[in-house]
Length: 152
Image 1 (tube, rainbow, N blue to C red):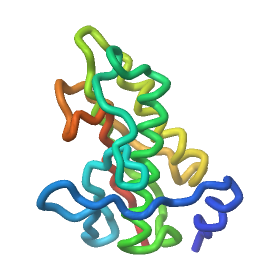
Image 2 (tube, rainbow, N blue to C red):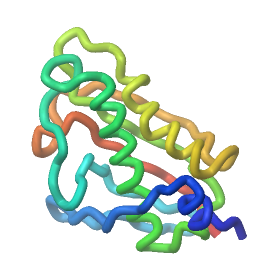
Image 3 (cartoon, rainbow, N blue to C red):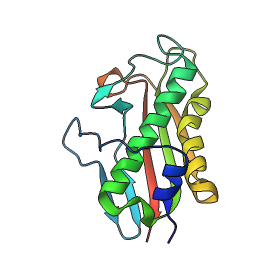
């Protein structure tokens, strides 16, 4: 079993509390050896840190940081459900970017999440991914990330 909790400590990364759902769903569900997270918004201490569309009111750098926050919230949901140390690998990441008209840099934004998984899990953090531009996200969030993780 890999000690991902110690890896987080080495990186000086602290998992947040699990973000409370904003509708009728749970933060994560396990089926077999997979955990699916619900879409995670960039909440810090229960507050959305930035609102608006990327390429408009929200800069690419700010949105990339928001995607990293979403990824941390996804890890917190996984940890609360099965324990982070049970993660075998990150299988898939889906990122949604609320995009201003003409914005096409969604992959660079979602790199904020992907790079975090690489830092934490190394080769086990290499994953399949989709980065999708959308017109609107819940609560006017700029980014939303969901994760599929293989677990023991």
